Amino acid sequence: MLTVKKTGLYTSIQDLGRFGYRKLGVPGSGAMDSYAASVANSLLENEEEDAVLEITMTGPTLVFEKATYIATSGAELSMKCNDESLEKNSVHKIEAGDEISFGQLEHGFRGYLAVKGGFKTKMVLGSRSFYFPVTDLAMVKEHMQIPYEETLDFEPRISSVTTKGFYKENILKVSPGPEYAMLNDTQLEAIFSKNFTIAKENNRMAYQLEEAIEGHKMSMLTSATLPGTIQFTPAGKLIILMRDGQTTGGYPRVLQLSSTAVSLLAQKKYGDHIRLRMH
Amino acid sequence: MNKYPISIEPFGEYAMLIKWPEEVKESILEDMLQFSSYLESNCLKKEKWELVPAYHTMAVIRRVPIEDSANLKRELLMWYEKATKAESPDRFLWKLPVCYDKEFAPDLPEVSEKLGMTPEELVSLHTSCTYTVYGLGFLPGFMYLGGLPESLQVPRREHPRMKVEAGSVGLAGQQTGVYPQESPGGWNIIGNCPIQSFNSENDPPSFISTGDKIRFYEISEGEYQLFKLESEVGIHKIEKIKLDADS
Image (tube, rainbow over all chains, first blue to last red; front, side):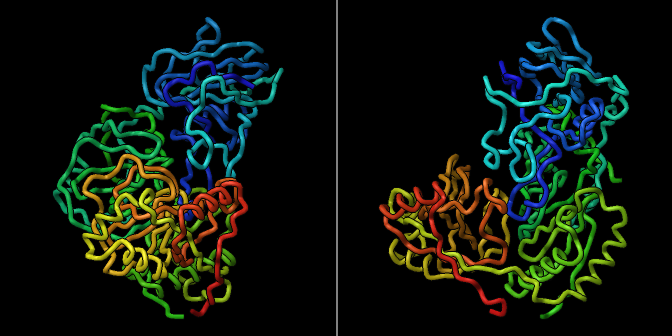
């Protein structure tokens, strides 16, 4: 077990997410930046579906009760074990009683902390990913205990990596969505030339973009949406659905982010800028 | 079974979207669900694929990226031509209890006035129709219901509520439905259904599927409290009628 001493801003358990329940309205959930979650799991030679902690902007303080190994990836968040600084993208040994805490966010928005063997919280509909009300909690609570298995000895084959190459990209690649054909030249020109700002309305469900483009009057019947679907509101706003996003919607789906772009966007916060480019 | 002219286009790296003619029509929904059952039982393993039907479209989603979408499109078109009926899972008409008493129906007086009828007339109309589930989505277990008569169609509230109670039964435009969870919302609330159709402890978590039918019936406040208790402890027996596949 580890005990959550402080929760941080929005810390949750995430894995690869749920599969097979979208037709009942249950989103996939899962790590917002699946690339970073995979890096952290890979360093520990975990299974790809092992659950990790997703940390948002302000990290938690965690007390580990059993020896294990951890690795973090994703956002640049300073991290300490007791009083000693730890590097991200590397494997660290943790002794029973060690306290992990996080400091300043330097870059990005979401960090991932993996533990050897993965966190063993309850599976709900085939996944450990937190998503309220499918799971009881949306985020970890103070004093909550999170189970994991003890690991005394582990020799990592690769003890550290770099992810700089992945995150230097500021352009999000998109492909046409089902209602792409409704866009006129003015709207297309705006979509692919504007330097968009991430709006305050951004969370695990969706990211809204601040700048509006010329609106529309198209109405359509509700149809399936996916993580990375860009919805276009009549007022001309673009809303990018993310991992906890609704499974169907009635706004035209003009563009679709690549899965790499979904991970990159997950590292953007209010006020950051992005550009869109056709694949 | 009629075959429709369908179109199939890639939808991102993981999905294809199949479109039937854009209409709210039982025969289209039926054809789409037949195809969905055919695909599930013969072509696409459920560990690797999921299907999301709603109204006149169905998304075919793969767990990992689709490598050759042109080939998948050819296969889907071929399967559609070959698809036969008979494999459809059972469908049901569910009878959902609703308490239309004042405390559960904050908008009932205003809405009935707007529609030019008494609250009793509104309730009797709302409980006399059979609604079709054209899709589940938006929130876990939320039903998109078709079949609301024109005489019950009223615009959304001008000012959405920050908090609508779970179970609230609402009217909005051509739609009626039940809020599965507490959430913000702009529908006109005319009652509350004590039965939770969605429970993540069960697998599948929702007893209602797309293509099922819904009828509401009126209950008293006393029955409401009992049904709610029964539903929460998992002993409520909901009334259901098996629908004939040919109906």
